[in-house]
Amino acid sequence: MTSTTVADVRAADPANPYAGLRGGSYARKSAYQGKKARKGESVREQLDANNLDAGRLGVNVVEEFIDDDRSASRHGANAEREDFERMIEWIETGRLDIAFAWASTRLQRDLAVYVRLRDACAKHGVLWCVGGKVYDLTNKDDRFRTAIDAVIGEREVDELRANVMRSLRANAVAGKPHGKRTYGYRRVYDEHTGAFLRVEKEPAEAKIVKEISERVAGGEAYLRIARDLDRRGVQPPAPEWTWQQVKRLAEWHEGLPKNKELAPATIQRIKDHADLQAEAQERLAAGEEALDISRDFNARGVPIIMCRWQPPTIVEFAQHTRYLGVRTHHGEVTAEEAWPAVVDKATHARCVMTIKSRKGKRRWNTRPGATKRWLSGSMMCDVCSQPVGSDLKDTGPRYGCVQPGQGDEKGYHVSAKTEDVDPFVLGKLLDWLANPAFIAAFTQGDGELVKQIEEAEAEAALLSAQLDEFIAEAGAGRLSARALVAVEADYLPKIEEAKRKAQALRAPSVVRDFAGATREDLEKAWPALKLEQQRLIAATLLDVRLKPRGNSGKRLEVHEYVSVEPRRMQLAA
Image (tube, rainbow, N blue to C red):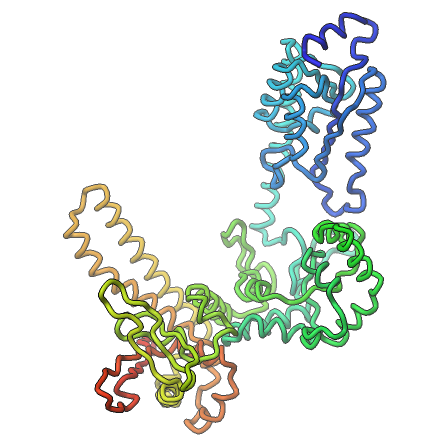
């Protein structure tokens, strides 16, 4: 029905001008925030009200448009409203004559959206019925009244957001927590007034956080830590069901090899919910999406029985500043001692360095827990200065350069048997670790250590910023290319030296355990370390380079083609 037809209908029967028009009923609710059991009720109430208005006007509702759990504000995190866009499409394709909404704020809380909807309705002759009152958007008075409603709606949400943000900033400065309870802590409230009093440790959870941090700082693989926690039956933080958990539940059976990674209590808990597993299997078999099933489980409050510790959770716990007792707001520290610290600063510093160093390396040979050779990724090719990898040949495992040649240059420059290289490098390492002067660098007090780390990182950042300024000057033509080359030659070595110093200071905490050990003690202790710990120690403390052996056919001694030096460390005495 075109806009002319709508006008004709209204003129034909002044007593009932809207009878026979095609109506679209729109409903929206922003967020339920802890009231998931009521999800869907608000939009249904809105649709019922719209239907009453349509019945009173004699309009036939031909389609419903529902955006549940969707914000209409420009500040909304879930700003995409699929059914609102669908309603616009129906308006623009001439399939609606009138749009119903319970209130103006259900349609929009953003002036830009109002203008878009208003113009679409005016162009195609579509009326509005908001709160029981009909508006013709081609009428200047109706446009004025609806525009006022739109301005008020936008101001309300802006004022609400300003109040919320002001409260968040005040809480941040005061060190008060925000959002959901953090794993490792609990909130204490006044039993009479309900007022917030303080945050204190949740002993059992805080113990797990501390263990995770110490193990990451000690160089253990994230996956190994996660699987160990699962085997011990440590309950992971699980805010809700996920689609992955639904699939794991449906596929689980007693003969599953991965059951050995689970605690007996966890397996029994799955068995006790056989009816839930049967439901998941039936719904998936019927074609229902795992994501939709997980959402339904969450809405019903179904116990979360398939959650497991995951490496990303291990990383988050190990590097987050909240476990230092620090309150942050948008990345800025607002309170230093907002709640009790679970982890000391030195351990946290080593965790961050370990995580950063692993992220910065190549995935093919340095993913924690994946590599099987001690020096893969940390030993360098002496020709191309690229990390050396490892593989398995007919003669046994070998280290080798993995860089192909470019042009006429030859690639894959060096190779050597691991059985020759590893004992030689280990002997050098243990000699240094048995040296009191060497190990003393890693047994300083936490406060002194953290201070030196911060100073080294600050120096690297300052030098980098200064170099960036020179580069910008050159880009603007105010510094010659020759002068820039001279500046870079001066600054780049200093920046690298500051970075190396910070890295050396952040050596794995397992090195501290070697303080006072004899060479004999070290030889006994080394095999007990996990491979990823051994690899992290080598990468942090040693500069190992593999050299070409030539084609003379002469058998060379290991020291002739393997260079081992301790990384330079400028530590305070």
